[in-house]
Image 1 (cartoon, rainbow, N blue to C red):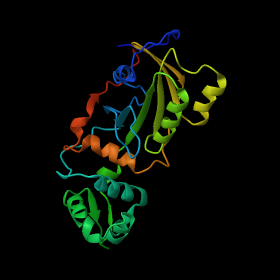
Image 2 (cartoon, rainbow, N blue to C red; image 1 turned 120 degrees about the vertical axis):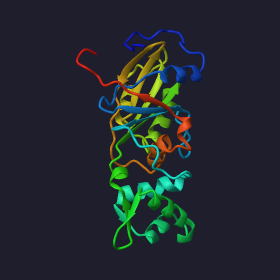
Image 3 (cartoon, rainbow, N blue to C red; image 1 turned 60 degrees about the vertical axis):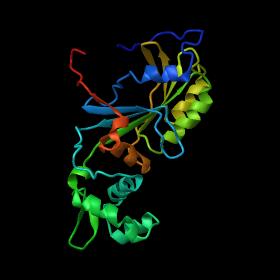
Image 4 (cartoon, rainbow, N blue to C red; image 1 turned 90 degrees about the horizontal axis):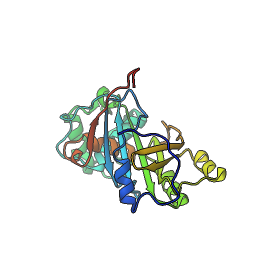
Length: 244
């Protein structure tokens, strides 16, 4: 399916937001040409948010058989803490989790047994090189038939865990005024006008690399942990060529 620019219609193109969600779930965003693998999932629960669509792009095909059989949010949080801080003691991790050290002993055991985290000579913990070098980008999309202000407000919240945040709207209802579109620019949120088989970029989002919270780590890990990845659809992406 190809996606190109067309003029917006004067009537609603989608009956329900679910129809719009299904339309955009077909799209393979060409945002990361060199990322060979991506995952997509509709209506992802992230903290107090539920983005209509989340896409996760990996810089290389991740391994799926190195992780513990059990997984919870705390496992992801421990990995995020070590990714952010480099080296931590078990006591520091317990303090940051607001938990007694005995309550996280099984998490530390599971992650060290699988060589996901490593204990150094001083007894402190750090990420294994493979885990530290996982490169993944998260894209969160809010789909709305109308009411761009509500959609933008939600998309701004997605910036807490997503590298890119986008509002996708029925092409007949996208805001047309410069003031409205400047709201998207100022908030670094992208804007799509969506028609059947067609997507128009109205505002390009800002790619964010820093200041993203621990929820991103859990989203990324949920796509590769065997016990949770069944909720995600995997896509092997074709690299662009000079003839595309």
